[in-house]
Image (tube, each protein chain N blue to C red):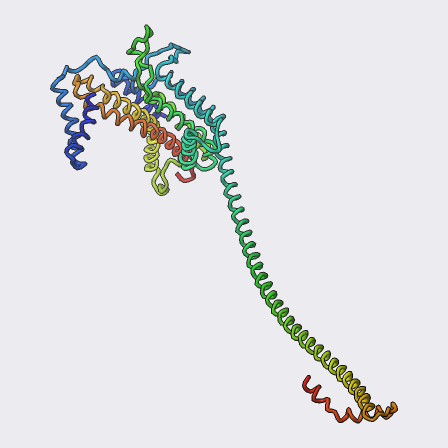
Length: 190
Length: 320
């Protein structure tokens, strides 16, 4: 403790040594003022200013951390969404391709069926026409045959002046007609 | 005026001749010295001025005399500056703290940077978390209070009661710059608080004898008791020397800065009675003013509070 006295005396000794130089001599009154004012300033700052500044800084740090977290979360979400949309897009494209293939196939099938049906229809029509023609031909031949028979009967009557009975007449006509070649007529039709 | 002439003339002469930077600087210095020599020839020396005492700028005259129980508590220039610094510190910090915004303006940003400096660099960098929480208000208050004290020391205020000027019949004290921290009393009180605090913390953390034992540097376990005692005495002296080093560092830096400004701003010319010297020193006054305001004021506040944190940390840390 002697040391304290020794060290403490240095500024005071300097004061005496330099013939009252006030620059390096501490004054008790000013020291008390300093103590009071500093402690008061410290008290006010620690009670009012520092906690509020700290609170505001903490709040900002929290906000920044939260914003970063939120941004990170959103980024991840949007990544996931993007991934999902990409997946869906690929799926949709696949489906579209599939639909296209199926449509093409269907169109081809329809076309082929239509072609077949058309052909069938045409053949059917041709066949029907043929049948009609044949029927018509037959009917015409029958008609001709009848007319020829009648004409023959008429002609024979005129020639023989004798009417034939129905039975004779029929027989004669049949004989005559069998000699006539109608096949040439119908043959040209075919 | 002459100083301005010198600084203006230098670039002009350089422009005319289109010289290199080195030559421009040399010509500038030449013109600067030339003007000083010219002034010396014109005005000459009027002899040493004995009546002018520069140290009187730092003399404390009682403005309001207060005496309590035999103690002189008079309000003088230093007390006025302390009051001003305390008021400014409290006002600024409380004002900023009450309107802290999420998006800070420039003043808030500056205060936040300073707050961060005290919180993380000064306190957090030197103390354990528990100690840091306990001592942060003290260290931060120390930093801000010393900083404001130093800074207002560079504002010219009408405080020079030795010289007055008259405005409409009112005697106004001359404008002068002064700093409370340029008094030894003020850093000394702060140092005493620091000194007592770190010893108390050390004893609280380790116990009285163990704390004294921790003054010895590690690695002396095998030394004989006399040697240990010798080292202990040296360590004890170093602790007491901190009282002087911490207080005088702040006091002397600020006092020296103000004396330098006083001398450069014309004090030296008046003192020596050589007017020409003013031409040489006046530009330097600007340079030193910027140095003091921009660097020394903040640096000394920072050093004082950092050393306090280091002392507190050293007294309480497990290994000395």
